[in-house]
Length: 465
Image (cartoon, rainbow, N blue to C red; front, side, top):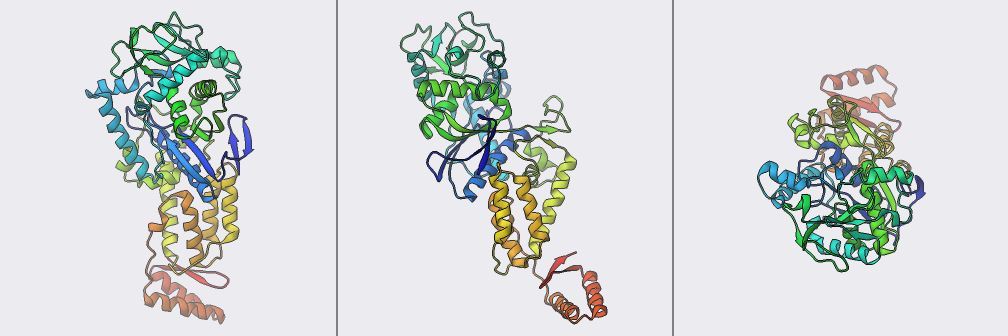
């Protein structure tokens, strides 16, 4: 299996730390609002990658986190915490905001048939581990304190820009967002790992009592920086080094770069061996926008009468490293394709079939080429167009659906009336006897009754017309 590793910017052969076990972590949602389709696409893509790994023989331990504290506006070191923003908007506590939108998110990913993660850590459950990592960074000289926060000193990080491949000055302007409002900050790129409940954060709704040794600390209460949670969670769940870390391309220059810097500084070990990044979902060719009314949710899709699995099928149409453009016309095309797939599968009678080895290898080859699901989906249609017996078609496609996750095993096959079977058998005999006039007559009679007969080399298939 070959995976495109952002760290090396090339496809690399996959070699997990402890084969066949694979540790896989995905950056999950900040749970202050309903997740839009772009975020849900990222969840489906990770699910497809997980299923692909399991289908090809790996044992995947999958974790996806919930950010319920510390994610400030614009991903910077200043601004309002997104959970607090949500709490003020709805007049309830940050804890209730998190619970509300975690429940909504979990309902959405379940409707999209995403497998349940083995771990679903919440940032607020890992405060002691995050504080311990901050203390380690202070002790090793990678962090320093001001009157407002504790910062990671970027200039001391080894190869800080190795993930983004940018020059250091480019990454610095990105990482620090040009933020210099803290006069004690040594450099704009230095990022906060812990905020004290003072200054602009004096009214923070979420804070924890903790005293760090070796520094002058203005107050005892504070809260962690956003980047820190993934580092602490991964260390506790998987250890200092994990196999796969996935997130959106927007996380490359800041969030994931900072995760690497603090994790490797604190642990003295490589943080992640394979970095995977999914591209964005656009709407009508433009960036999703709440103000423009295009930040659609799954509820919007359902309200227009679409099965959530139609959206999953739509997501299968683009590679995870490619941008995908959402339009309602494109979703309607996905619905037509999925309806067609379901109809053809339903017409395949439930007699015992076997998985075709040649087509399965073609499907596996697509998965092993950096999880090329669009190519894998094309193999499904190749199966349906093939001369395989109906039972083999059904068995092969249901085997592939262990990856696709379209719920195809739940489709009931159509019961063909005995009279229709008799007409089909009579036409097949006429065809074998080269009585083309009778064969055509019986074909037309079947068509009038709503059935279509497709001839193969050694068999035929009946479908509703």
